Length: 196
Image: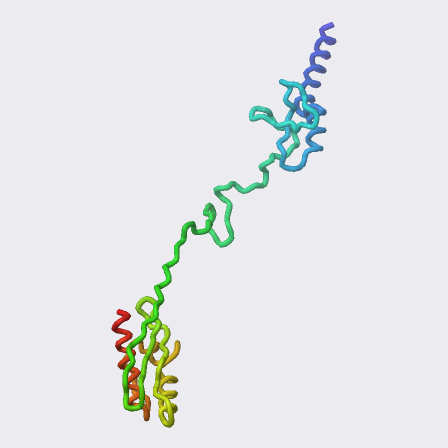
């Protein structure tokens, strides 16, 4: 009789151990049907089962044997690296980055300067304190004056002319166009004085 009692007790203990280690059959079935990364555990037995509801593992419920952790293989957020960065740092776009305001652009016209060959008038465009363009509004016309005026205009005017390069009225005199060069410089200087 004693042997039978020990055999029954041993059988009961072994069966209990198998059930605990392997988990309930419904837990294994749920684990096979769930996608990777969904927490797995015994269903909540405290309330009625909802058809189609996904069982969730609670914090105190042990994971069935043989099931991988849902966080296995992940890099902790503090150790995660970003391309081109060090471990633990994250690059974020600069919020509220401001650019320097563009300088105010204004146009200033110099006075008409009278020369022995005709009138000269210059207009400049200034961005902030920098000259960005110069234009001859009036130059002597007719005969040799056309040729002289074209030389002066080609040398001084435009966005890449001497006025923009020198950033002032201290310009070399154009050969064989002394009077026209002088008139251009005087109108330009007056425009620069107004711009300041």
